[in-house]
Image 1 (tube, one colour):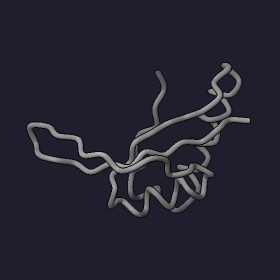
Image 2 (image 1 turned 180 degrees about the horizontal axis):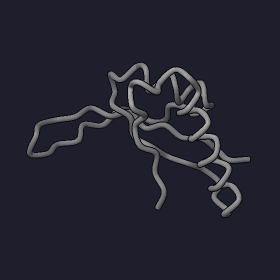
Image 3 (image 1 turned 45 degrees about the vertical axis):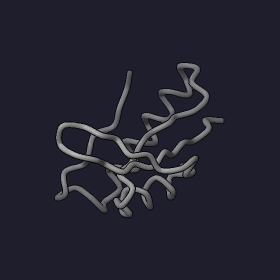
Image 4 (image 1 turned 90 degrees about the horizontal axis):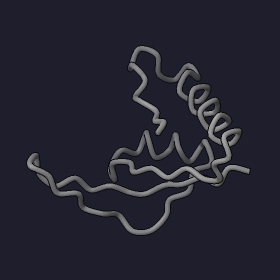
Length: 82
């Protein structure tokens, strides 16, 4: 399983996240994956805008994830790898 972590705030808005995500998507494509699915915090508009810029689409309805720390509202996003 592969995943992307957050970019340090000091290194945001310089293209590092876009480059890392593009490389990850290319690697997944080369390994035969056809799509990527993720959950993003519902009110995290900078992250949602980033993924939309990278051609991810919002899918389905938001969900409420309940944990010991409380409820977290999340939105699903996905991209098809061509």
